Image (cartoon, rainbow, N blue to C red; front, side):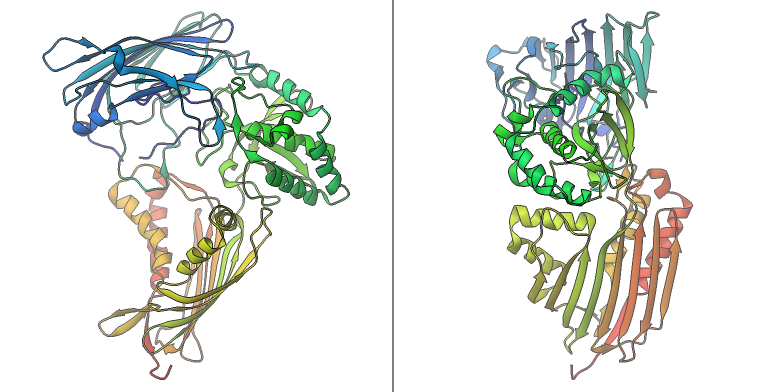
Length: 624
């Protein structure tokens, strides 16, 4: 059953399909490309299937609206059904004309990039679209129950869209009481019958909410959302899955998996975990196989997974869990919502999680293991599953909620660098970089996907404004990441200094760019929340020589709830300059109110001023 059934593209979402966050800044209603009306009725049946009849109407207001309706696709599982009951087009001042059957096409939907997915796809192509054209169509759909599901769960999401919402009415009926949870639904009227088996949702008045021109790392973590379920109890919703997972875990390990467990026997627990993660990475690839049936949350058996040599998240998670248990390490399959944005858990139902991982207890600590990733940092949680709820399927068959914490800031990037300037403003550069956490993960993945030569070229570009003669020294990157990874570089930077009016300047504009972006957010009235990535510490120890500067010593000590910044800078004995800069990012998200607060404004001003102190006038030595 679709998670977001009301977008104009009508792309169905599978049970393991993460929601895409919206970007955000309000667009005037006069620029709306489409006007839309939606009316539908859904029945939740006793067998946990769902039947819906939906009518969608759109009027083209701008030329771009025509492109949005150029072709309307609707994908659905092979076990489901879709009938186009009515489709018609109305030109301005004319009568409705039925859509010819030749303009409605049903075929097998294409496979996703990493999977076999037997779905059907129905497409509608309305002819002669122009500004003022109105299209309307009615769909009758049947959604079969997911395997092992005994409770219904429905997610009605109304994110910002480039469609003026003129009318919206939805009615739901069930043979058992409907539990309702919502957020930000003030624009809608929600009416429920006394027996709680009927629900009506209607838009109070027309509205238009669409966001434009936000930063590339901007998201809306909260949008209008209404969730319906037959139960709010974790055990009701996921108990049958916990029982099935435990049945699979109780089976004998296949030969290859058993040999891998034997190979790590006797090693410290963290080395055993690393060894088994390495085995899965070496032996299995991520590939979802839904050809035989819609498996939902149900993994293949251990024997089937080993025979296939591939699996999706639930397959690889159940295999890893079984291997860890065989090694004597407590491990439990866990369901989460993966991605930069983790939605609040309104109804703990079938469509809340989109990913399966493993919760393991290693040397007294909790590790959250994701065997689908191309890298593994022992003891560290991957950024896309931090700071969110987790539904743990216990060995006793009980399902419980846990919380995956945000990782604390730790050294992520440490740079020690010397620049010796020549008379023409070039510099001989020697640099040593220590990488950890997310940057090291990115480097390892880049080596794996593009090859070392490509990665080295990218690294050399980052060591200079205009580099040449770049020589790097670094070890081969690995799947299992070390606590720290070193890169040494020697090169020439042909534009090490900026030249203006016959003078040479050194600056660290790269350190100022973040604060410039925050200032732009405030001045342009942006609205979304900003994702910064996981908390981290970056530090620089920089020595400049070959020229002279009259810049005195400087220092900064900035403290805030979001960032800490320290700078110690002083002239060197040879006439050069030396500074140490350290920045601690304490949070992964900044919301609109925080960024626009007086305290954050002060942080921007102080941080810009601190970095500005690293703008130096350099007098070059003619002999160098």
